[in-house]
Image 1 (cartoon, rainbow, N blue to C red):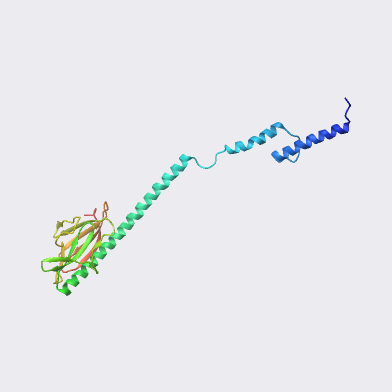
Image 2: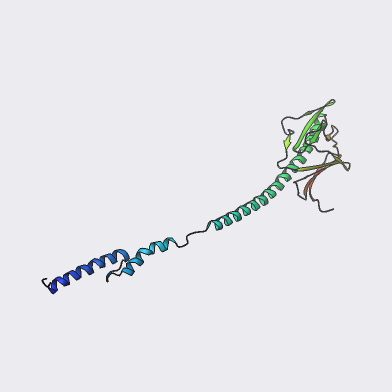
Length: 217
């Protein structure tokens, strides 16, 4: 075999090193240096290690956070709803107080009795026509419902008057043509609430409103 010249061997060695250097630069981005099988294998494994690294929250953690947010939202909703219900009931009581005063004025002006009937859902006014009571259908004295679910406690002369699911045949309270009014006390409250919105009607036709705490005797 003919002996190769030193120049040919040097060129082959240069080509080998140059090819490995391109491989190393392509895999590792190294500017130069001889190829190493360990370095090349390490570079090829690096994407696998990255894919196994933890990313984001686990399913249990997400569920826990979701439950906490849901409980917080419900608590806030109940708190806001309770406060809003108290305000609505206060407006209902004040509106009824004003309407009773208006009804008594109309009874005195018209010379006809005007009655007030109360049930679980609201109240209505009616005009006395001889032996009958004709409910008002429109105008200021039209039927109205409580803005919120309320418990109504009605008393006359210290005696409790039944407030049922439907209006009674005859009104529980009457504004007389003389300007007088059936004396009464009406307490409105939200279920499970100790705050009551009270209306006190006097025989002279005046109606006073107040807020009381059922726990205070």
